[in-house]
Length: 521
Image 1: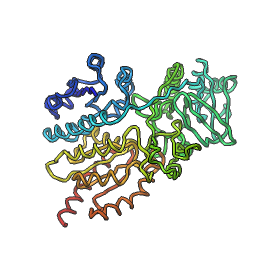
Image 2 (image 1 turned 120 degrees about the vertical axis):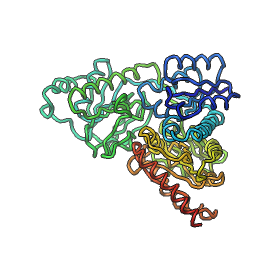
Image 3 (image 1 turned 120 degrees about the horizontal axis):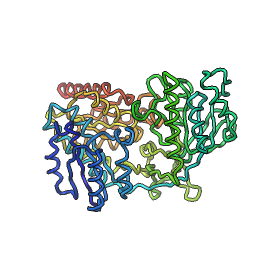
Image 4 (image 1 turned 135 degrees about the vertical axis):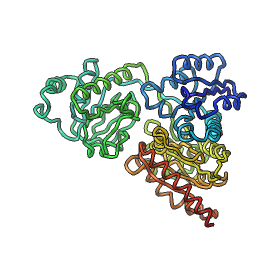
């Protein structure tokens, strides 16, 4: 495998702390190693593309900004799209967070920051080496959009899409209010939408929703089955309705229970789920209209394509090991685990699977695994992270879910919060994926403690991943006790993605607890 490593100086924000030239020299055995001022400037994008083409690279590791930058900043993911357009498989792209998780929190310890950066890059290099290529599914997008809710923003979005030839499905748990309940400026738009021949209204609750951007399947009470290429959510500040929709839409919520967008500044209508857009309540009608236009434009661009491709980051089954017990079916809230009627063994419905990995932890035979982060990779990553020896000797593995745990650590960096270099982060898809073998491997490799940072209640994007982890917690502690390891060396806590200070405070409190534990042993 030919891998290229591209290290960002972050316009000085990274290189001012981390010795990026020492890192460059450390990896001189790789096919390509380049240090760039900023990975996202036009010159850097051209250089990376040229290196991939000229050196015929199979994998690329980007060491610089947080993975959230690529997924949540408007057009931040273009570099990933460029690489995939150059035939770099999604599983062969590694991202190392040098800015938020190394250079900012460890600004006063440049030597240790550089050592830690090296270990995190090693983990990413291992990931692109051991993971196999992820498959793809091609979807022919439907030019139908479901608008959930009856707020003005939904009507403005619908009007724009109707002008572009789309069909609209309005879905609400209650009938649409009469025009007289809205502002006078809104009434003409609502009247036009209501009378349009390409609009249908459904007053029913959603009982099922799955699929991909371009082709969602929606089931309503009364056995009404609908299909839509995209979804617009316009329910205002109705937290109660948001709670009812949450298990189906899987949109992040704030502390008040309201749906929230990906980024309040650059991605106002985008959500964590491609193809699902949110019209946030605005202080003025002009803000609502601007959001509606943005959502309509994004949906038009998405659904006007000939096809939409999706990576299959799903759970897979080794049928040679599967016992057909059905445990995965009982575990999967998304109804993605099935028993094949011919083989009588477990299989995965790729249209429903979100790749959370909860079934992997639940499988008693070890037949299931994640395409995005196999057990082999996670075990290897723990071994690599254990290679860093912090000055204080108290080394902690910080297992953080992608929903809230890992983002909270990033937000801590953005807030400039400092903490010990001995906190070694490892991202997992969902806390529900964490099992005893990962925890035991950490202690076997010399970690003095393990922190599991999960989503707090009602914030898990996989709905019950955090709860399933809680149900296994006593098993974790019992296994540790049977191995002569104090259960107090394992700590589990929940956060929302924006609680950076909370996650770091918990980690540092845990390290202090471990020091006390060892002093009194």
